[in-house]
Image 1: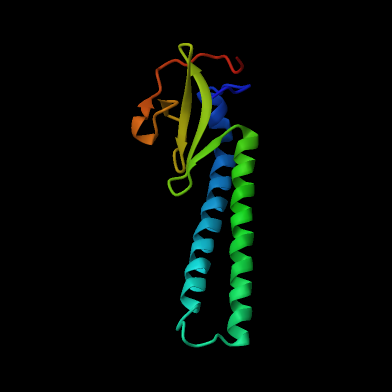
Image 2: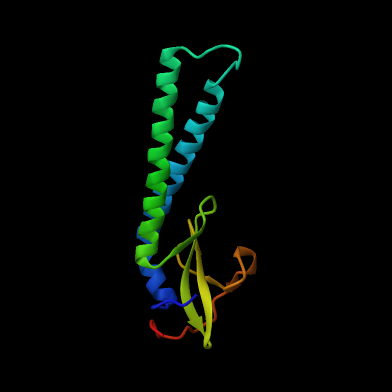
Length: 143
């Protein structure tokens, strides 16, 4: 992981309102981009027929909108990185934060909709390896 900062559950919990907003926006942009991309795929229609100029213009607009939304998603993920989180799964709204538990580097694992971070997992484990937080967590935030 090699991070300059470890988070405690309390520190992640303070970020949850910001995380919820960011993840909501990322999901909205992703769903809209998928809708437009599907529309773009369907607009190609019959390959034997040459598309009309208006159809080409519409496809160009749809393509530009999809690219804009993808850029927005990447910027949102960049905002998560700035606060210290790593987007692990956009569809599930999973965001991990580097932490240290008993001298071991781990991830604090938060999922959209959770009111507090309640799980952690090892560096090589994913969401299926989530374990409940221990009753007490070390107070350190740097290593």
